[in-house]
Length: 131
Ligand SMILES: [Zn+2]
Image 1: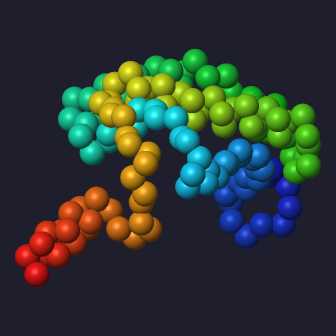
Image 2 (image 1 turned 45 degrees about the vertical axis):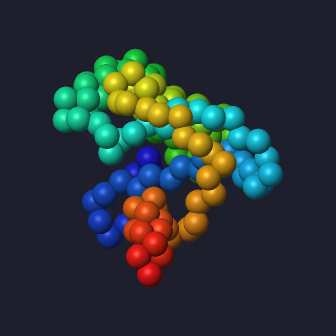
């Protein structure tokens, strides 16, 4: 957070740079099957438990106060601390979901078509059958 500079609003500006590792897998590459959180199948009670578990586990995550208060946009040591903080938050969200929300193994061999969800494909299949 930076409180310096010539700003027209009374809001504090926040600047953060995160190095998020993204990997792309090819069509032929074997992708290990991992459980996928089924948010759409979660009941209201499960969502409430997720909220409570997330709240509990986020309370354990250490806040990198010095990094959050650093005004040096190019501060390497604090960027690393912020990256760790980001990783902790993401891991906490996933752990909370794994503990409270139903999951299922998703068959990764089914190729998805951008813009077409399963419902759309099902309707398309039914339409082709009726034609
Ligand atoms: Zn710093």
